[in-house]
Image (tube, rainbow, N blue to C red):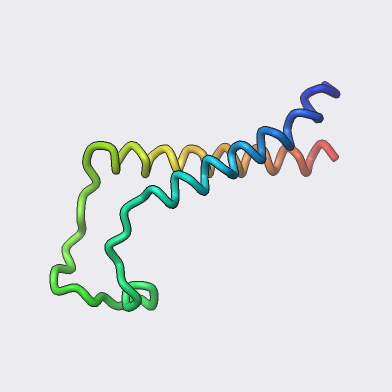
Length: 78
């Protein structure tokens, strides 16, 4: 149990780096207007994710969930 407590912060750092990379790899088509709820583009239809973009999107969600769970476990064990 003690070794698990020592390795959890390392897992947390690795997950945070993977989460940052997966978020930065995602394609962003929104401009500044999209950040405030509006849209600057004429085509406002929802774009579907296909191929590698879909894989990166789903992996970012999974990594975020794992990071949250590990963070909660670290807080509980201390």
